[in-house]
Length: 255
Image: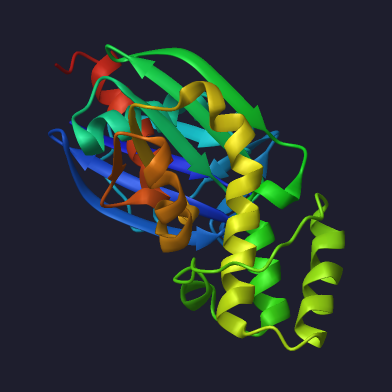
């Protein structure tokens, strides 16, 4: 049985293909390119699988921002919470954990107990606690995002709660001649400070990190003191797409 999972994100479309319970392929395309080059429109988005070089699919599952725009005669649409919970279960083998997914434009915190979602916290309003904030601040510092994510020691204090004002505050610190490592650490710590209130009621257990921000080494360092164990998955950015596949496998007779 071959299952296609598509996570239609705001910046990128992530695609996973599962066969006999194993992920056999993952790849991603920019959201603009996906809709422009790989789709046609007939009231709903029709995905051109031939252009994607995907064939012999038995089950189709979509999630993400654009899930309800896909051809529902072919795709089963599921919400992102369910997709990411299933993805984390598949990738870790765990049934009891807290999931933290920091995406480009939102944050999802999900409590899973015995394989069932029992609580969640969402933030879809403020860019300052999302991945886009880190990208913007790295651009201000003219440093690669991966390099910025390494620094966590002696962070400079950044207190602005708005992403726009934070950029101005950072520029002010640059003008004072603050060391670049401290500036990077300050950005990472300010991100952690914004996540911390959302994580308060979910502390103390295993925390599974998914999404692009799971690659941020500094934020992981800050989170270590709040949880018994930090668990990382092998394909954090494809977690939603993989979870869509796993959901399709489970509801169609998989064990």
